[in-house]
Every structure is written in structure tokens, then in C-alpha cells.
Image (tube, rainbow, N blue to C red):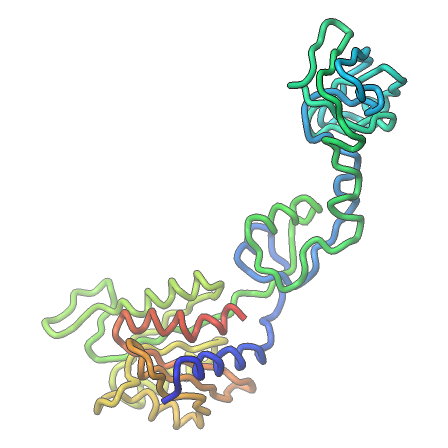
Length: 322
């Protein structure tokens, strides 16, 4: 038996050796929860123009160094203004009304918040001075054209979706979800849509594991329940090894009909550990099988529903997170 620390380190070291799944181009929202297979780069400077962060007046800071200061308003610039509409010259003693998100005209170097001003016709009275650059985001200060905004290997969440959309990416390259086969074992199990007999229970483990797999970014593949017979268990294990990872619940303890380790051995499985000093979850098994021209990792998890969920989180999830 390994200690928890030893077992966890074994899993984490193994996870570090795994190659990613194949990348695929996906519509942006379909990539949510997956891992980027490319860098997301800026298609232009961000922002592409000096952007006002406040509603107010674009001014020359020197004109409002002493307040109150009276300036003549010579125009208005709103968010989305054309280049011609924003190309307003500002001479000494002048200001331009500006909205949040609008481009700041070249002659202005600060924005006075509307809260600190009064307007009377074309005359604006400013009651608080501003420094040069105040309330303006300079062009290119968030990202320069072709710079990396999000690095390959980042899991796609709502913020990454926003960045991809901002750089005009309707599709992005992401690694496909790893396929995780889920195999529950035991003659006492029936599927959840069937009435259980007097000594049977419904197969909740396959569904709880599938939910955990999906939450961890994998694609669960639920296999039929494996009965306590070595030949049928072997057939279902072989099917499970067609996936990227196989999770087996039940059949890993010391009982007469706990056949999982015995049948795995018939596949020449390499066992990395066959028990951990934890409760619940002591009989958890971890290893790999060489089949179909590749190596497939597997976990044998205890059949108790709580133990199944706990051991997945402690040991199987790091392989998906990695």
C-alpha cells in the first residue's frame, strides 16, 4: 500500500508524461471547457485608438490646471464614431464632449468626468483638474498587434471566449475532450431505468463518474454493467481500452468475485499501485495497458458510491486536468 502522498505523486508524474489529444477546429462556444491548441493573437492593437474611460469632456490638461476653468465645447464624439467624426481639433481653451469608449481626439490629453463639470450652452466649466493621460486608455496599451493574448494550453472559459471574440475568431483550435470509458461491475447492479430486484441496486456509479468526467473536461463513455464473470468482464475491458482512459468501479477488493485485477493482469497490465492508505478508497488501483498500438491508463475504483467519487477526485481527475 502506498501513502496518499506517494500515490498522488505517482499519478501526477504519470499525468506529466501524457500527450494531449488531437486538436480540432471548433466553433467558439463549442470549445468552452476545452484546452486551447493554439495561441490567440491580437489582430490589431488593443485598444486600436486612445479610448475614453469616462463620459465627460476631452481637454488639454494644461487648460484645467487651475480650476474653475471655462472652456468652449467645439463638438461631440460618441462610441463608434467614424475617423472623420473623431478628428476634431482642440485649440487652447477648448473641449470636446466625449462618451465612454469613444476615441479621444489627437489634440486632447485627458478627459474630465462629467460629474466635475457644468455646461451652459457652448461653455463648459470644469471644477476639478486632471493630469495628462487621466481617464484615457492609450492605443495598444492592452495588446499590440500580433502579440499573444492567450497562450496555448489554457482552458477555455467565458473570459477566453470574450478575448477570442474580440480578436475576430469565430473558430479556434482546441484539443478534443479525452474520451473516458466508465465501467461499473457487479451482478447486483441494474441500469437506472430498470426496477431493481430484492437484492439488486441501481447503477449510480457510472452516472456519478460520467458527471465528474464531464466536469473535468472529458467525454464520458458509459459501458454496460460488467457481471462477475471473467470472460464478460474481459470483453468489456477491451472495449473500454478503446478510449483514452478507463475507469472501473467495483471489483477491486479482496472478495471471491472481485475479479478486476485478475482480468486486468490477463491484459499484461502494468500496475503502478494497487492500494492507498486512505479511508474511504483504500483498494484503488492504477495502471496502464498496451493495446491497439498505444498505452491506455486505467483506474480501478472502489464500488462504494462515496469511495468512487472521492477516489476519482483524488486520483483520476489529475490525469484529465493535466
